[in-house]
Image 1 (cartoon, rainbow, N blue to C red):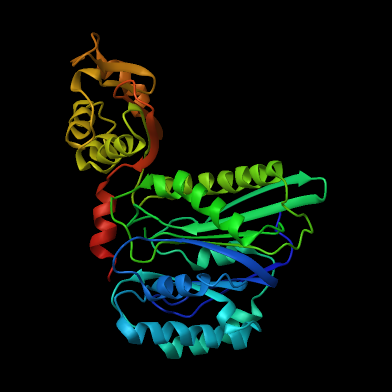
Image 2: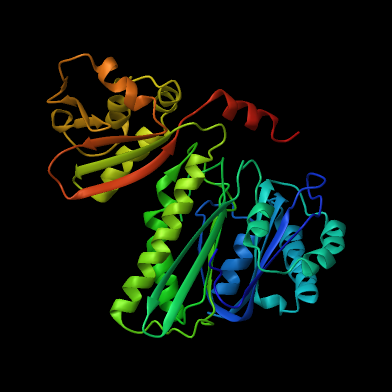
Length: 392
């Protein structure tokens, strides 16, 4: 794996929720990095989200990201904010970086206060684990994920090679709008803070914000990105900017797909494409109505070509389109147009398509310029079991 220059990774076992599990991780930059962040729009924003937004507002450089699983520190009031700040003080002493240069992120059950004794006890182990293995950090932020999620990219400019690495967790409570979803990006390009933030916001909107597992947006969602300039490669021209953005987008696209692929109990990934809408917002309404429909999602799980559920969801989405204009294709097979199903045995035609893991559902709703694409999981019996038992 091509690790960006100037970063070290750490992970330790604090037993925040489960014994023996890696549940505290950190990414440390050898030199302070420009930082960017995109956050949940949930009204109940967790203490680490509020802390990060406050820290990034003044444009300061950042030396580390620290993420934990098992304790969300959400809906915990002023005590939760104070505990969050104290974890940064503890980490600063252990990692050797200023407390006001560490971005925190947390995931877990909402409502519980941090066990501060466990935070204090784990810090020496976190510091001792610092090394060059990002997989350990990626594992430390997992909750109901079945696999850790990493993606990387690199490209050459005249000044040398630029490298990016991204990690995320997310399997349930996923429908980001910036699930439970945390994502961290490390890059070694020399880029301005303004350009880095713009780039991250744009790329997140095209990737992480276009996935749904269950329609639930977490209190803790965040994407945090550092770029420390240690490659010595400056991003200066328009072409440089476009190239960096392209590779950041590719990292986030891969992470977004891995989130949906690892959805709690998930067995299918639906690529819901909408075109011909009057606006992008209308296209988004159609895609999310289809992707969040329990009936569509259970049909996906059962490999059932029940296309009527897709039409129904599009019809109640609230998007502005004429019913007679809608054209539906599943896996490239024309299913519905002009207000009526296409002739032929659709069950037979669609059976091999519905049996696949990745299924493309395309809805054309007119001749407008609006379009979007959403990744959605199916809804399985295991999803219900996981979430019924998660607190135990």
